[in-house]
Length: 506
Ligand SMILES: Cc1cc2nc3c(=O)[nH]c(=O)nc-3n(C[C@H](O)[C@H](O)[C@H](O)COP(=O)(O)O)c2cc1C
Image (cartoon, rainbow, N blue to C red; front, side, top):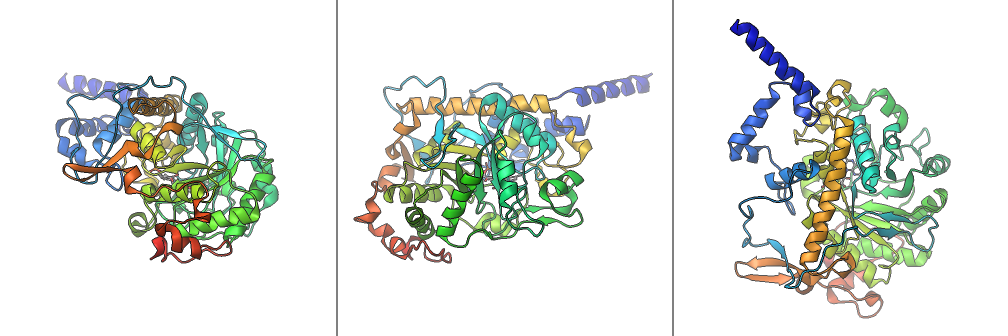
């Protein structure tokens, strides 16, 4: 009798777990999945083990991750008990609020992208889905991101794996990214195919086109898709064989100098019928950024946007050495690009997007203060989809269906539910960003100022970004270049990129 009752009870739990739509873990691991929830509830230390990160280099901590979960579920926006950060710690950054806060904007501002050479400008949202390919993510994940983007009117970057039917299923606006392998626009031997690019980019869903130069998590090497994740559909979309892992080359064949890069971006814009065209990079050096600026002046046309990816950014697969030790962190990268564009008189033609651990409303405001116009987020969007950071993206065994091509595991991700979560997460995060800005006394990102962000230098001493860094005046590099920029400015050539050793004139 007891045995029957236990079996019925267990059966009921299994049925409930399989049918509920919120938790991917329970859909894939009925009954035993509750063990994880229980462990997370009873011991904060265990939560710390399942961990993750925070501003600049530190892991996405429990607060960030739980915040993303609760924002995506529309649960609550307030936390009890007070800060979990050490607000006095050296290096800790904080905003300067106003004694007379203003009302936050109800409708978030849009950021128009597209300079004078572009005839189909696009209005970006403040927060968008960062590039993650179909292949690294599952079909269900791509569908939910795309439908969430459509519902919330924000953009969905395809990542470098080409445009799949799943990117078109939800009706969301796409930023089509091509990387060194030119998936979706490549010849049989891997070269760039202008005709295919023109065909694909003319699709209505494609609102902007982007060239990936590098990615913060693995600058200097190309994308990797492990063989186990290459399905027939993915092989077909990318134009690659199924029997070995899919590796994008570390360098481009369409350009090798700054001038050629700018000319190629201009040709992407032309081939797409005049849509905004730009590139994404993890910054190498001050000199290379200035070389690009000089090339823009020489060629006489500018990219419509530059996406700066910080070295703290995520990836589906990369060697740890590259994740941890190569590339410029987002704060430095952003300020280098922003100031180089201001100093060469180009800032009003080019929008700056930024990515790298953008998770909370405060991240948006902080990055906009440092020079970004809009933000992209990858891993936070994955968490909105239900990612629990099992770190098995490369193994095809993602327990929640986000980063696997295994059809059964993907069933854990219920697309309509996760569409809502992605939509909620973006909307609530932008709303919080507007509330933070209002507390600083401004309504619009244009009115943010570097003096509004301070960093603790020691306990009891702090300085603002306005004091800590050199902020160039429009066109200043053509006149009186400040000392910090002089050598890089002299060395920068529109005809060559350099090795990575002369950053900051050393
Ligand atoms: C699963 C996964 C796949 C990614 N795929 C791409 C890609 O195809 N192209 C690209 O430029 N960046 C790719 N990225 C990097 C992100 O777009 C972004 O630049 C980086 O993760 C920083 O954002 P995050 O800290 O919000 O994750 C990927 C990141 C993740 C986590």
